[in-house]
Length: 115
Length: 110
Image (cartoon, rainbow over all chains, first blue to last red; front, side):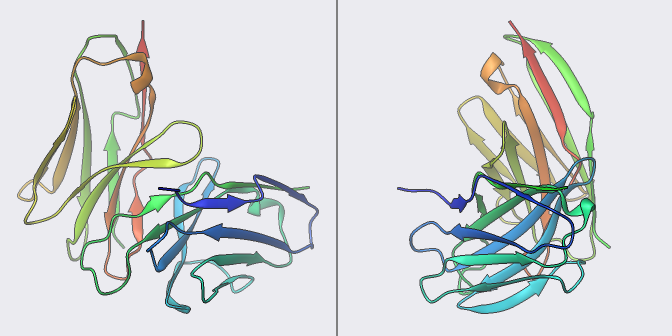
C-alpha cells in the first residue's frame, strides 16, 4: 500500500514569493493535515482538510492557506514568503470524520528554503 | 493551551540496553496520545493510546498510558542501532490537531 506522498522534495524561494506544496493521501483516507517543523520549534499544526472543507486551523497567519481536491489530494500555499517560513512541511493523512480515533500517517515532507 | 513535555531530551545507550522514554501532558480534555519515530524526515506512527486502550505492544516496543499521572512511557527492549531516532509524543486534541512534545533523541551505540 502506497503511503502519503509529497512534492516537491525541496523548494527554494526568495522572500516575497509564493510557494505551493502538494500532498497525496493514503488511498481510502479523506483527511489531510499540514504541519510545519521549523528548526528549534518542533512540529506545529497548520491545517486540517476533510471532504474538501477546512476543518481546523492552527495559529498561523492567513498567508498560509490550502485546499483539498475531489480526489482528496491537497495543496498548501504560502504567500509573501518570509525567511522564518524556512522549514520542513509535513503532510499527514487519516480516515475521515466518521471514525472517532484516527492515527495520522505522515509523508516524507517538503523542505522549503526561503532566501 | 495543551502542553506535552518529553524527557529526557537526549539519551545514548549501548546495543542490547533497555530504554524508557517519558511523556507528560497537560491538556484540557484528554482524547488520545500518539507516539512516533522520526529518523530522517517522515515521522513513522508507532502507537495510539486512548482511555480504552492504555497499553500497546509491538515487538520490542511497548507503551503504557497512566491517566492518573497524566503521562505515558515508551519502552524499547534489546535496543539496536536501527532504533536511533527522534521519538515524538503527541496529544490529539478535538479538531484532530496533534500537539507534539519536543522529542527525545535516542542514539544507540554498537
